[in-house]
Length: 255
Ligand code: PEP
Image (cartoon, rainbow, N blue to C red):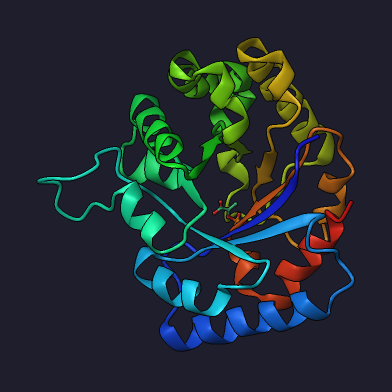
């Protein structure tokens, strides 16, 4: 069975003071909550420059941390990039790969996303590979083709034994940051499709891959996703910046 993950993507938000307040609140609430730490794993992905701060505050707690992006290169003349080995030095466990904002605003192709995810996997990080369709794709009936094309370059290169080391996040673009969340049935249908694609790589591991939903998740709608058989957690943007929201979302996923 896949483990439940609740990942907060802070995007371009935060400051030393705001992060301190948010993380201290998460730690305090998480320690006193009734959710057994093993039943749901909380992860925060701050802007890269704040990762050392997250490490200092979260070390020794049950909350993990990760990065929002990664270079597919390991070293050299790549100004502004950050390598997997650097994230590992600061205790990161996860890294997002191919968030739709990277695909759209920074023109990241599915081939590049695949090479980032493979670089992460090969170094011991867990890549959270994001896929999802636009509103136009959905309305024209192209949702599954789009998801398939986004996953293909990675799945074609992935050693079947490595499948269990990845996480997939289904994030329809029309639901991200719009307040318009997808309903539970729509999400379940997409997740089942993704799991079926993963099973074609390795049947035995497909059930163990966490498939997360992302798109305007908040405390008020989290249980609708938690009730779906192929939803193993959520990737949360805006609501991850509010302590009570993020923790309530996590509680919806306790097993
Ligand atoms: C995201 O950033 O991945 C996301 C899903 O954002 P939001 O929850 O704000 O829609």
